[in-house]
Amino acid sequence: MAEVLVSPQFQVVTHVQTGAKIGRIYFPALFLAEFYSSVIKWLQRQEIHFSEQDFKKYGDGSFRLYFRTAKSPEIEYFELIAIVKNLHNSYS
Image (cartoon, rainbow, N blue to C red; front, side, top):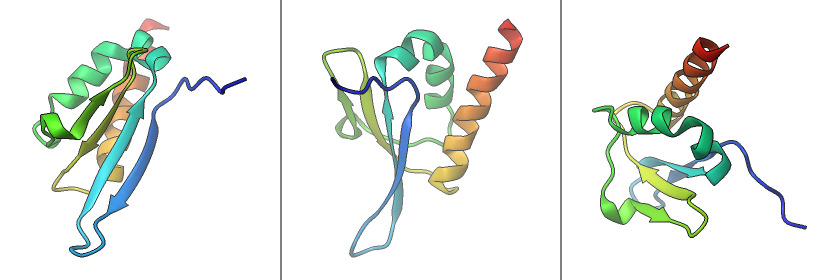
């Protein structure tokens, strides 16, 4: 049986020739069902840069995104987690 992912999967990818670092996040459908508005809020931040080619949507509603940022990709990923936690805490 396949594992069902419920939280984003994050990875930093380093370009072999240039050394440029980009972030890659896979957003599972179950995570998006609960935190869609938080993800949209994060994606709209001016610090996050991506194009249509950096985005891949899957049939189950999940998607993968490659993004660039002036800060480190890890910092921006932790910003996403902070946004999600703040939203979750406001519902509690």
